[in-house]
Length: 550
Ligand code: 3UK
Image (cartoon, rainbow, N blue to C red):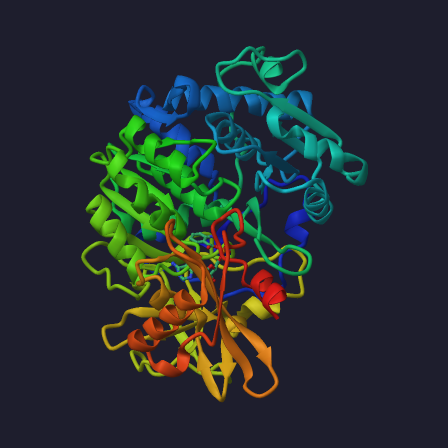
């Protein structure tokens, strides 16, 4: 197996490596597919970027962004190489150092990402909306020594610096093409050569830390090897997405989120395609960007497709070929709305920060409304009962989703490794069933199941029913503690413009749910809101609804 013959680490700074989970706490890895046979030495920047230039494709388009930025593979490579020189020669980066990146998605952020990886560093991505306190937590946990930050987002990092004794080198960068401020990353990079010899990393050297968007406690840092990035490229994109070198990728997830890092950087470059990195990708900004760049493959979250469906008629979406949804369950109503609006069957997929990317999904032909899909080639999936035993395949019984594959959970120094990895399986924390067709059907996060009057009720099923009602724009369903019933089902609803938030509407929605799914699941309480609390990645924050509705 590739992992056992990987050879010596190239890391001089072994901080992260020393904090890998113990061997018996790691998930079992599967490398059965022929495309998952990796060499012992592997730097994923060489594979994703330099390989294309070496093959004579340097002139092909790689990245586009705001302000008319259009970089070929050779341009992106030259930019990354210059920054890599700055990291090594001016900022003293040695292989294994953690380098924090902070910025909205942009070509410069992509160049920084490759520069760190080329220099053998470990990328620590951060979500643009994070505040000083959260940045300081990340810097402390990962003992970050260097940071490259978009000048427009520098303020929160500056505020965090007094709490960050390990962070000794910070450089700011401006947008690609703009004149570089003295002392900035751009000014330093301009003096450097366009060639760089990538650090000869082992396939199982760590190349990135992805902090989880966890809702409670200290964030967990999921570590990924160079090999993990390439393994992810060989599985879902090759077998389910099946994009081509002429595709133009676009979407909303930040590169700090592995959904975005894969979908908007690693996967397009792995096949020699191009990517559009837009800084603002809210539904009203993503639609005109799709039209402007004639994008063909779109990655975003279910709520974004729902919001875009309402606005789609005002935009030219004729270039779009494939649309991917992940981050939370895709309600059947949203799938139908987008098909109606854009003529495209969404490719749904469940992935996680711990597994890097999507492991259950369905292409357009296999899409089944309400189901996530089939296990992705390269991975294995099972549903476990409460004792950790595998439930019979296709039994329709609800249990805990368990995954194995070529990637897996490796938290940096975290006791919660033993929660995510049990008996060699990665337990995602989701309740799922597998139906008679082999399709995996999402129920809820295991800790979000509502137990009311002795019934197990999955909030997302009620949300899916409510979303079928024409007046409902968005909704979230939780269990509110109740003495008599244990919990009562409570729905928070955002109505479409032009509808009244009154008792009659609440009763109508309750009656609608009773007609649509088993009546005992109907929301006994309905509260109207102007918006719902969501993470930067589009996930509904049920814990916030619970605390305000409890
Ligand atoms: C939920 C879904 C139902 C599920 C992610 C694609 O979301 C990603 O990573 P996170 O670590 O969250 C993982 C959890 O999110 N989830 C994600 N996708 C779906 N639930 N249907 C879906 N299609 O609870 C999962 O355990 O933030 C998604 C690729 C990379 C990612 N990191």
